[in-house]
Length: 136
Image (cartoon, rainbow, N blue to C red; front, side, top):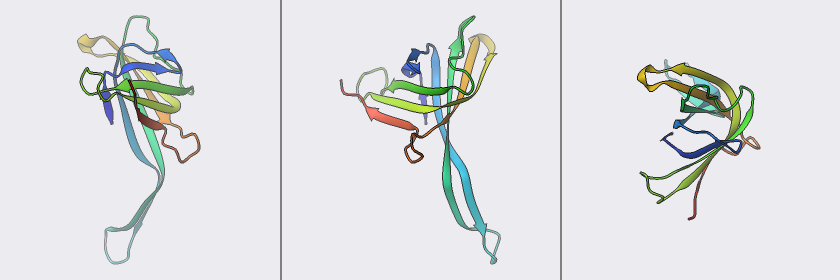
């Protein structure tokens, strides 16, 4: 999933300006792959654990901060909608821990900051990324 220019993104309640994108990647935390004796192809596969990684990229002004420290538990909240309208607004909430943060300069665009967050489930079975409809 990727969201461009999300509205009103906050981390632990503090507003984070200039957010260009938020992306969510999902992968296997632990997988089982077995091969048979009859040929070279997989005969069984299972993903018993999942890993969710979130990346936030934002424009960074001179002297600006990244938004959170490595190792910090975070709650990221923002709203999305189709186009610039308020129709079909949804609130995205992500719980996790910051794995890395970096800052660089990208050509004429100026400074940018990136946060990488691993999603953390509240009980091990709930998805750390929730999307709910916003009632106007």
